[in-house]
Length: 298
Image 1 (cartoon, rainbow, N blue to C red):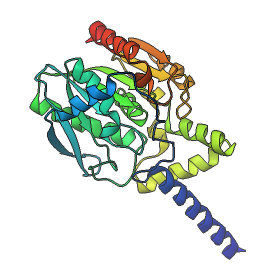
Image 2 (tube, one colour):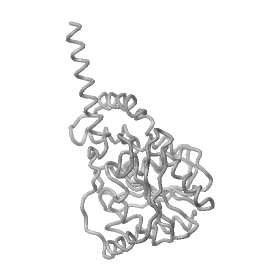
Image 3 (cartoon, rainbow, N blue to C red):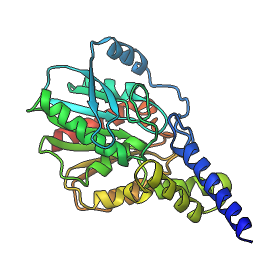
């Protein structure tokens, strides 16, 4: 009987570990991280091509979380405002090139980073925004070291949106002025539960709790650390919430929960776009909203 129980326990451990690796390993596509292909508004592609031709400084930091060497690319427009761009799940900094050119057009310096376990950066596991939020503090300090007087804006999409929202719950340097989140989720547990229900028609409570335990052992954090609503309840900075109503990777309803969980200045933008593609199909309104947000609060 004891042997049977041990075998069953081992089987459970192996299954949970397999799920952990499927979800959090480098390059994971577990949450459908590659946004759907959509036709861009006229002019966006050519503007992005021109942005990519601009000279970029390669920056590096060593993560204070685990020592991983992380890479970023800085477009120096010699302006007093720097936007740090944080990408999402299973992609790298290039996934936000179109958004980066927007901030370049708006006259900001742009720092595009590769998160841990993404692109050129070291690291083995994705952090649902938690590990990335700690690394973001290191990137903020890096910007301060080169441009100590710059105002800093944090922009994130999908898991990157979770990253900047989680960072909002920390004591951030005074240089950090604004947060813009596009298609962010409420918490790691919530988004996993959503996908369990969507794909497998189960709530997955115990499964998610088990995977969280494996994450605690292997990656150093449990999913409780990635709670954006809790972080925003401590936030004082202005936040712009952006989301497409046809987003089935991170459901639109999460935006409403996020925008009402704290006492801070906020603006909202909605489109009929899919995941992280509002700017592609509604670029004029998207840009106008961002511009108005910057004019009002920066």
